[in-house]
Length: 458
Ligand code: ADP
Ligand code: MG
Image (tube, rainbow, N blue to C red; front, side, top):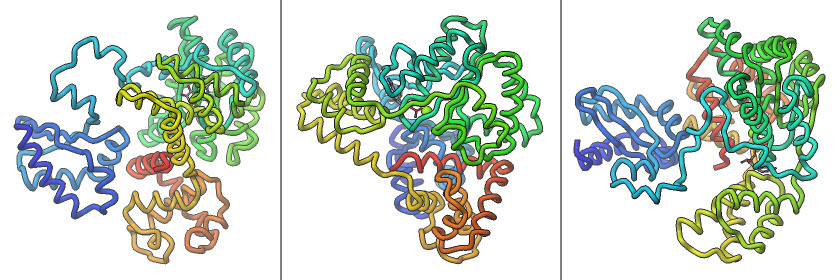
């Protein structure tokens, strides 16, 4: 099908979809979408969207509507697939390939660099980790863990606020061990969300043995953001047993969390005491000098020069989060490299201020309710009011679930926030959704997407 026909077909489809989807959602998810291909033999239409997040979202929420709308205009279409269609991909598909030289240093697709067995990303190394007073103990202990695997500090528990380098550090341990022992030692990095998902699907498909085999044969198990497992009973139980077996066999266990074990409210006592029996270290906020050092390190990694003035400006303006520092550097880098413009202090300051403002939207109950409303395409009033309609009740329960799951709010507070309801309603909602997501794949997926939306601080 020629590109122009694809374009027309997609325009028609969009005009149909526009009638079914609220305006903000339509703009958010379909603004830069397009029909990339249609295969007349197989009947497969390929829709391109902006990023992975949009892909999962569009697929899970609008798939049926898209397929039907497309079929309205083209009966040959029997299936729709989705791809991420960024400007780089477009370049590859539609334009002549660039000369080799330009490809060097091109921004790659980071997810492709993750090692398929260990899940480790090679960029997280000890070398690339700047050490200062806020993390020196954590760093020294991590080195020791990598050196004396399973012997010295086991389990090893790192905690600290978001964006302060926990993931970097625990992955660096994994990368260091892999470097030393090659494939003689089986290392696996597992975000807690993935662990929980694995457990959920093992239960669903009655294949608990698979999960046992998968996790209990590992030599170095790295679990990131374990606070997420707290309160998910079957996952806690599975982690507890995995933990015991690995530990008995002197396998190394490395855990990160945003708070110490004692402060994860719903963590089962026996798991908490296992964590507390090992080495616990924290990472706190970097001081000024360390921030400057991190900035130097990051710009060097990118091979890009930043004046001392601008480095100091970033260090003084960005208070806490190393991830934000990186975000600013990326933006400045982009500005300089891709726009080919010189960076003066004034422009840099504008870019920094912008970044800070964006990050300032913190996660509060109102933000969560707003995201839930957007996701289910209902209004705030619908959530707060008394309507018993099915399409309102579920989102309302999900909202209550998330207020507890993400913010750890008390049941009376949740009831109060969500239309002055009784605390028993909040308890019921939380428990219902918590159970439902272990059984209902679709809802589970929605909750994951919603959490991503909430965390994205749009
Ligand atoms: P967390 O897991 O604590 O939320 P991350 O490990 O994801 O934080 O760190 C956020 C970003 O900041 C990462 O890109 C990481 O490489 C970088 N970073 C954090 N701390 C340091 C440090 N001390 N030195 C170098 N980079 C760091
Ligand atoms: Mg992390």
